[in-house]
Length: 93
Image 1 (cartoon, one colour):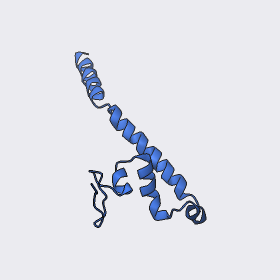
Image 2: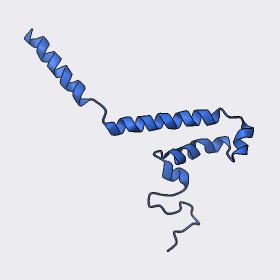
Image 3: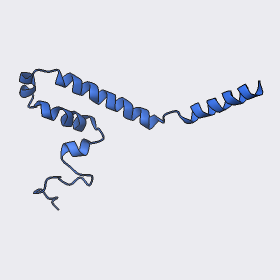
């Protein structure tokens, strides 16, 4: 009986330690929201995408930039310092 109680106690400790932190859950929720938006936009016909100035290749980068994903700066065309990312563009002043 003592052994079963000890195993139950240890199992409870492992479960408590393995809970995902709030940041990880927020990241998962944001990723799911971005994927849902991408899926909805991908379902639009090409004509509607042209009407809003997009093509199929732009969907992922545009949604990521607008919803602030992990690669939002790269999709928006800036590096981590906020300077333009293009080779011919330079930060001014």
